[in-house]
Image (tube, rainbow, N blue to C red):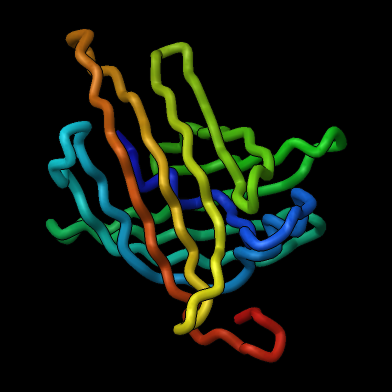
Length: 175
């Protein structure tokens, strides 16, 4: 199960209606924080610290993510976020195993809502946004996933991410 993959998508400011490009733009910079996973009954099943960096290259937002697990494992992922001609947001995540994961998204109520459903039965849906707080911008993730196992059982998980901007230049709002 690769729950940390969910962290690589983009976010948006909640205060106003946004274009898909503006929603992606709000995540540009360097972020660190915690990502916590809960079972359907509220029991915490995983927690990790993560670092994200987003920048623009030729009209595509590119990202790198480093996840640090309590057992010492470190996992690095990359992503490409962009807007299609019809306004759909796309997030392509490249985990270490090389299996491309694609999310489709749209802006809703000041957040990007991402979703994917696979033939194997994996379903993930989550909201990402950047909000202004008294202590500075905070990147937030709230979502759920359904993950089938080989024996036909399914894990139903809820996840929450909270990240703070690192080395933020407040004059431009960017790293």
